[in-house]
Image 1 (cartoon, one colour):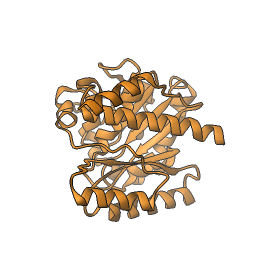
Image 2: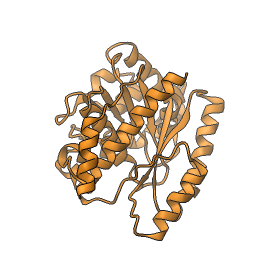
Image 3: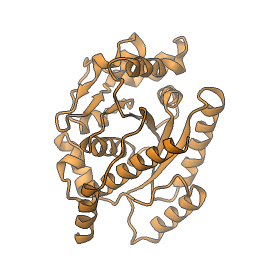
Image 4: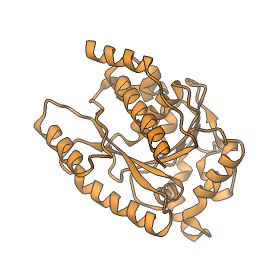
Length: 285
């Protein structure tokens, strides 16, 4: 516990550099239950708490990111569905999160469940989100630092829309037996999108979630992921944490629910890594 508190204080004292231009990051893994939404909302909240202007787009019909960020997403609420299928501007459907002033969320409602099928017949169906985000960044959202898109646990049209507009993909991986199998498929999808639809996309970050260093399996999986993707995999892992799991029940992220907990400190460290890497990458370009 003392180590967690020491890390928290060091993070409090450190800077979180802002990116020179808006970073659009798709958070994706077609396997469910790997901490994808948890990673999306907590990294976003951590960056917003340190001064960044952050938008989370909930593109998962389950709407769990909307729940964790405390925004309304009952059926009939203006949402990402209207932006994708009715051309409603994103600024008209975004809601400010009650716990963090510089954090906004475009919610997902149950209406989104049919969107993968409904989009099939739409003109330029893979570019719907691309158009909506570019319009936002050219106008009302021009000073946003980050846009995080929480993708559904599948590789359908909603995920494809996210990848067509994103510069980066953040992949959360649970430290368990089949982790690398799913990762290989996801990498192939990213490569296909890069080749045919979005030459700017790349996997920038891999986060190891639900990590228990006491088990051989977790250490082995972490070692294997790091050996395959040494540059993308962050040193900081996310421990299994009751506080992280219970926070959405309070309509909060763990960053505001219990900022001293091991999960909150881990996500704050991950957010700082992402901020620093983005600033360093911009300098090299």
